Length: 417
Image 1 (cartoon, one colour):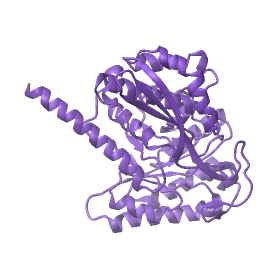
Image 2 (cartoon, rainbow, N blue to C red):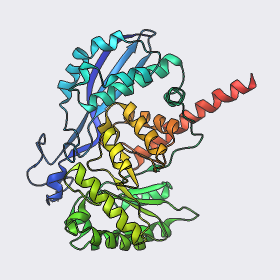
Image 3 (cartoon, rainbow, N blue to C red):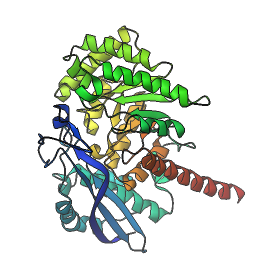
Image 4 (cartoon, rainbow, N blue to C red):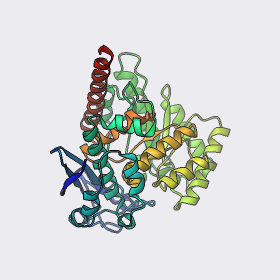
């Protein structure tokens, strides 16, 4: 199967891009926006609209395949790629990448994406572009072979497909109280993320605000639950604990002990407790913090996010035992072949696996990731895009349900024959 035409179009993503540096430095909320001046390159405002670029492939049999290019919410910090310019990306796709896309044969996915990053064209290509192209190629191969994207991955990478839904991790955004109620009512498996990105408003000078929030969260789940619903708690604190305790790892470990008790009877895991300022320092400090937590008998897994963006980064963090597990941040890895390799590597090393990403992705990114999850069986997957809870949950839950139903139908018919 060949590609007849390549069309790129600008669009919106599921959320916004935020200048994390300005927010962590104390910029205050003003309604939905932030007051003050941006502090990171590429930002005109502290919060600005999220944008996307769709790559649409017209196949020679008339079918259409597509994927989306996106940036993460906190672009350009902790080693993450900067924001891209959508109109420039459109030109790049249709002009520079058009010839290569027209030249390839859409029969198998893995050989295409395993050579994608080594192409001369890819040398300076934004990771957002590689993310979108690889999604479109997966969709094209699935349409060519008349099977789901999940089955393409399972067959070509030799994995055992999941027969159940992958547990979804929902994120509350700044509305971390009302949105928790939504999550509880919908029996979300992992919650609430919390967007704990500001010391003064969300953590407190001595950690008191966050501690109160965890207590409220535990009590709220117990109050609203009517059955044996026992979600896993997961908070992303964006390095703010390091700010509160001046990077004193002993004090941070003791504080996490308090968080652990406040969460009971529910289990809790903490993402990004510190930001050490560089990858090497982050690996060293997180490893030390983990050892302190274990020594103190505190049952809180530590999740790596900052400075862990590429496939090589993930290899380093896991090999160094710098975290109990890492967030596999799909847009930052670019080519989804890297996401697949990251999940398989984590599983090989016995690490809990978290297929993450960003609220600033699109419905298409979410659908593709739902297929990756069914084929690879990570332990948890981020519900995306957006911060409104309902939309991201719906998109990913329904895509998994549709896919499993289609595979079950095909399997049943084959058995009847």
